Each structure stands twice: as C-alpha cells, then as structure tokens.
Length: 360
Length: 179
Image (tube, rainbow over the protein chains, first blue to last red):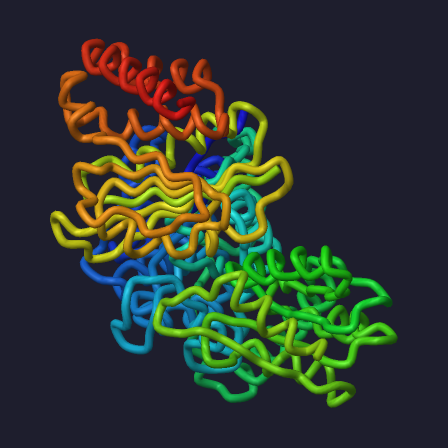
C-alpha cells in the first residue's frame, strides 16, 4: 500500500478501524476533533458503532460496558476531557478490561488552551484515577508511529486486559505526514479476536444457556479478596514492566558528553538540535521513551556511558518525566530540565542554545 | 537536501493548501515531508500559516525556525516571518497586500502583484496556485508534472474550469519564479 498524507488524528482513527475496532464512544474537543469526525464518517461504513456521548464521563462508561463484551473498543479526547474520564479508567483497570484511550494533549491546567502540551504525563503514568492501578502509556512522535500504535495498543490491551493510553499532543494530531497502513483485519479475523476473551467476557452462550455467566465488577467488599485482587494486578504490572518496555536510542554512544531525554513531540525538536550540533562535532545522545509506563529506567541508566557529564531533559511542561529520569540516573550525574508551557512548542534553535551552553 | 518553508496570509487566501499540495507532491516524488498548520481560534480575516518541510533525509522537527522559503500573501506575514528567513533564502511577496514591503536585503525577493495577476487569470481563488508556481519556478522544490497530476485528480470531475485556471496560474507563477 502506498503512502497517504494524513493528519495524526485521522491516521490513528483509520489504523484503529483496521485493527478491528468497531466500537467508539467519545465527546468532541479540540485538538482531537478530526479523530471523532473520522470515526463518525467511517464507523457506519464498516458496520461499526460510532456514538457521540453526552459527555466524556458517559463515553468512558460506554467504553467500560462495551469492553465487557471482549470487543475492541476505543475512546479519545484531549486533556480536560481525559480528566473527566479518569474515574471510568480506574473502574476499567479494576475490572481488568481491555480498551484504548487516545489523549491528544493540549495546554492546561483547567480548560487551558488548545495548543500542544505534555502536561498530562503525571496523570497518564502515575495514576490519574483513584486506587492502585497502572495504565500502559504509549507516546508517539510521528504520524506514522501514532497510527502504528493503534494496533499495538489493542494488542497490549487484549494481552493484559488493561486500559492502554496513546499519549499524543495537538501537534501530532494536527500535523500531516505520510503514513502507510497495515492491511485491515477481515471480519473473520475480528470475530476471532473476540473469541480469545470468551473465558471472561459477557456474551451469550451459543445455546442461549446462561448458567455459565461471567461477572464484571470492580467492587470487592471483602478486604482479603480485594487484597488478593490488587496483588494480582501488581503481579500483572510487574510482567508488563519486564516485557513491554519500548524506547528509541538516537545517536547514543560512548562518545556522548550530554545525554538528552525527551518524549513525543519534544523529542523531535531535540533531535533537530542534536543533528545540528553533531555537524559541529558535539556528541549528544537521546533516549526517547516510547512507553512512558512502563518507563525505560535501565535504558536511561545504561546510556550514561563513560563520558556523559550531564543529562538534559526537555518537555512541554514544567518538569514531569524528569522525575523518572532522576530515578534512573540515581544521582550519578546532574540532571537538568528545560521546558515550555502554555501550549508553546520550543524551537530547534532554542534547544540548540541550551545544549551549546553545556559545552562552554 | 532539505527545504523548510513557511506560507502565510489571511485566512481564506489558501495558504494551508499551498503547503498541502507541496507536501503531497514531495511525498509522491519520494521525499520525506511534514505539514504543520497554525491552528486556533482564528478570526475571520485573521492570519493563517503553515510550516512545510520537504527533505531527502528523515525530518526531525516539523517546526521551522528559519525558513529557506517564505510565501507571504499579506503584510502581517512579511512582518512576522521575513526577519527569520535564512540569509540567501527566498521570499515570495504579494505586493498588492504588502504596502510596506520587505526590508531584508540579504535574501532573494520575488515581489509581484499577485492578487492582480490572479484576478487577470480569472479568479482570486488561484492566488495560492500562482504562489506555488513561483516557488516551483524559483526553487524546483517539486515538479510541475506531479502537481498537475494531483490537481487534475482533485478538480477535474468537480470543477474543470477552475482546474484550467489553476494550471494557468501555476504556469504563470513558474515564469515569474524563473525570471
């Protein structure tokens, strides 16, 4: 299949449909409106369900119900809308249901603005909703990766029966880049996907016999039962932490004097600065976490190499992922941070200036 | 080889479309491309701009700090973006809407009464295609044939008359760009 020039919002929607998503519930918000618009247009054409809920709270609870059927289900929003969904995400994590949530981040807090930001890192990776749970968080940095992550997110959600969030931002949502899609799953393949969940999902038995019914619930009144459930969740999370780490090493070598850590949109700007400084003989590496939870602590630690004298973290917030970087670096070298907020994206020239100052 | 371009003008002048057709054509010619629009609660008659990058190598930042090419269809676009154009870069300026002009002397300025020329061709709607033509004529960033193919696929069934006017505008632009 040839490449198509597409907005990130549209590309992730198309890729989700191709991955077998036939259930989508959401409420519109800028800058992810093209996503819901695309779903509204395409879902009826593939025999799927598109429903514009009356609110984000309603949409996530529709996701909760639909996920109980074992089918691939998705919702999307932008920062303020994601906050509204958080109660539902906690319930879905507690009930161990698979679903995909796309957050096309904008400036906050509150209603903030509609420009790109990375202020939801804490919310996405450290909880967001109440209780001891984790959400798998995938952070794309290009339109192609945004699209590819749709199928990856559904695979992970199905594999671990856990909510998976794709944490993008307004720039990735609004930007157009060439994208190449994987072949769409056939109806037979989609039906097969549903069968893998028959041991737990809510579905009528073929003979209509309801004796072997399943219950989906996040309420456990008995503390001993809840204790076991939460410990089981944590055993699952430990497996995810071991098996599902993803990151990109860019220009990382033993020659690096500075190591940058940046994710999503910010990482692309940092790469431009690294490329320009490389041409001037300055060696700078970059670790780009692709999974923000689980976090690639070991990769950051390993990339310190022999000569790295400082780690520089760049984010479109006031310093959130930098806390994970500090855990990884564990005081071995200083960790510096610089960010921009308010929906303003830093430029390659600004990052270059910050990095150049490290060599003086 | 990498060309970083900013197109800017009033909302409705079709600047986002300039970037889009250059990006599509660049992609079809095997280049890496990115198209990043300004978006927001813009006023009617307010400014719109788009950063387009066409490169042989993978594109790191889609944000353009120092454009190689600036297409400015009105004065606010010149005021905002001309100071950051790379020395030796190209500035395409619509003199009908830029009464104060461009003060830079270290860039290649192509100044033309683009609104008048578009009207002469038959529609102010072809202003953006005239601009693409000038950029192609000056820089060769994409091939005319690729663009003609894309526009034909886009407009032939919908509006053949407008297609003809657009192609005329592009060809006229190429002539201006080559001078």
